[in-house]
Amino acid sequence: MAKKVLLLCGDFTEDYETMVPFQALSMLGYQVDAVCPDKKAGETVATAVHDFLGEQTYTELRGHNFALTADFDAVKTEDYLGLFITGGRAPEYIRLNARVLEIVREFFAEGKPVAAICHGPQVLAAAGVLKGYKATAYPAVGPDVTMAGGEFVPADVTEAVVDRNLVTAPAWPGDTAICREFAKLLGAKIEI
Image (cartoon, rainbow, N blue to C red; front, top):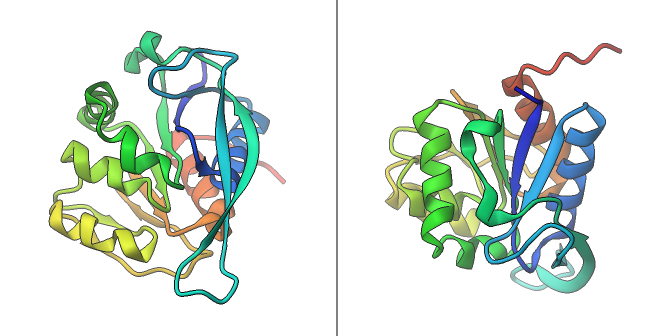
């Protein structure tokens, strides 16, 4: 099997939570197939830059156009070693796509590594795969994790939480941690 990872995103995915994992996993030698429902390779999704500037919640600015590298309709989960679900606003609506939920369930059924950052666990909750798992997320998504039968673990924004085949992180400052732990789950060997 080729060293392939599926990266699931959508319009207004968080910029750093998409670009950093895509580049980090590519650097490690994985072919990262970035897909979005209803889009094909070569098309783009708009990203959003989230930051805290003093308001009660994050602000959102328009980010880059992120180029997709594979066709969503052609995804066969047996071709992939792992799944990375990006954050931002995309999870709130891609979780409404039946095939997105099937994809997530297929990865969990096979016990393959899955990573979800920020709002990404909304997709996991909608797929019904969080029961009995410990997971973190952006704090506003904590109730989704709990209602889906998971145990929400508050974590510092620079940390990741690992439970069996699942790794989660609360926001883009945790890109290093989630990418490191996901790479470990994938079996990547990093020598320094």
